[in-house]
Length: 104
Image (cartoon, rainbow, N blue to C red; front, top):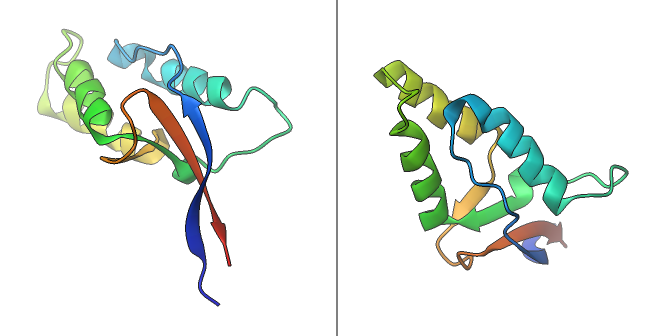
């Protein structure tokens, strides 16, 4: 049986700025808390999708911040985002967050 991807929720992008690399973990936590305010509800972070251009802008802003001094710092930000940040797709509207699920 093959599973088919389906968008199960479309939410507005929460007011999280992702401005400072040193605050990235807090910002990602705030982002997920904003889209899933019920602590009993669990969301697989791999199913959270934002706009690809927004992702690019966030990562550029973070890696160009004055706190970032080396290429190792930049790589750390990118790897952290890959591990914990939302996925991205170009077809997600810029100001939305999609949560996908799978059906048979």
